Amino acid sequence: MLLLLFVKVLEQHQKIHISQQESLEGFLNHFIDLVVIANILPIARASATQQRERMPTMKEVVNGRVWQGLGSGYDCNAFLIKGDQQTILVDSGTHSATEKVKEILSKFGVTAIVLTHGHLDHVGGAAHAIQTIRVPIWASQREAEKLETVDTNYIDPFFGTNIPPIEIGRRIEEGNLLDLGEITLKVLETPGHTSGSICLYEPSKQWLFSGDTVFADGSFGRTDLSTGSSSQLIDSLNRLSAHSVDSLFPGHMRSVITNGSKHIAKSYQNAKMWLF
Image (cartoon, rainbow, N blue to C red; front, side, top):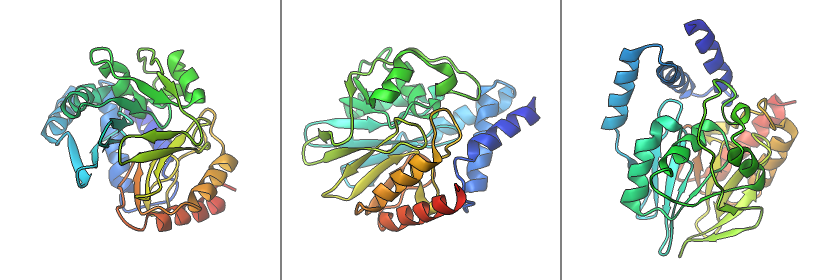
């Protein structure tokens, strides 16, 4: 059973196509956390729970405007963006992050949750948290269809984890502007990892919240899961390369605060070399 789980995590970790310094640590974190999820090792589960409890909920990364949290094990990075009028949470980790997500929603007065795409490691926390703390959820049309009907094979192709249906309060699409007050995020449709993947771009501050489309250090999202497309991902990376990005806030691995465009350009070049 452990060998089977190991193979599945290895397949999942292939979303990081290019070997990075952080890849081994990330892979081991994924493996340990999925052992916990599968309830194979109760001791490991208790240890992981204690580790999460010791971690701060969110770490401030841009003074008074952007916080980053989660990102441990199978959970994606989650980003809190605080404007003068609205505060949004971008992505929400797995169901294991539910209590953390509820804490974030309450502590920061989150007015909406934006999902970059519909995989479990990005939506699970929100799906459960909003059962008790009602916050509207925004996503693209294609991802909304999967989440509202709970397409389990799409949401969690590895273990088929069940989550409650997620009602999408606002379907966002290319060119939509999310005005938070002093922060305006432009929706960019970036298919490839999934057909309905989106990024959020703040042109005046040159921030990019990239989900699983592009990561730091030349990495990019896998394309071999349902609705994934290598050609579409390359096109999306090409489009992102045309934007001036200083700070890159991806769904996994580290964020970079300066020179984000260089990381995206490297990812685009790597994708062209590795995906065809």
